Amino acid sequence: MSDFFPDIHRELTFTQRWNSYLALVMAGVVLFLGISMRSSSLNAAQVFENQEAGIRAQVPLNWLIDSKSDEYVIRAEDPNALPFKTLLQVSTLTVGPDAAPRNVLDILDIQRASQLSAYRVISRTEETLRDGTPAIRMHYAYTQDERNPFLESLPVVVEGVDVVILRRSQALVITYREEQNSFDDNLYRFENLLQTLEIF
Image (cartoon, rainbow, N blue to C red; front, side, top):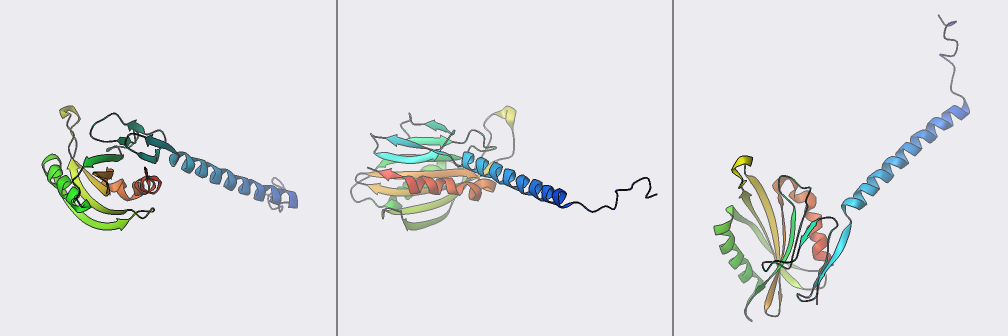
């Protein structure tokens, strides 16, 4: 039988072994570069600036940006996210001279209880931003139903975070909303927005 396959038990030569090792190393390098390029592409950001509102921050590249509404300074949405488009938003509210961040959250609570289905507050915590600005953070959840009757589906549970900062007679509300199952995975986008936020 061995006469028909004379080389079946022959050991690999030194050159063949090194070629095998080199191929494995090259495959590993290509895989690493591919993952790195994909990661950098997903995390690429662009600078948004609104001189009138005095706000500058980084938002994800290639997201849908809307800055023409009276309800917010900027809204960025991930067009590829399903079933809920990941949302980052910065809005302003006029407040009185004696207002505190918690008062702003109380107002938002009242508004959302009537606007959002099954709205509930999960937590409120005080924090300090990178530049030393005091702020308050609220974590909440609600359900969103499909409004188009031809696309009926189960309600989507959405989690959200608001961070409120007071600036003179205004309150800045920085918002992140995401479908519950992806909330923790994409929270870093919100933290990056907070870290890069400049108020001038």
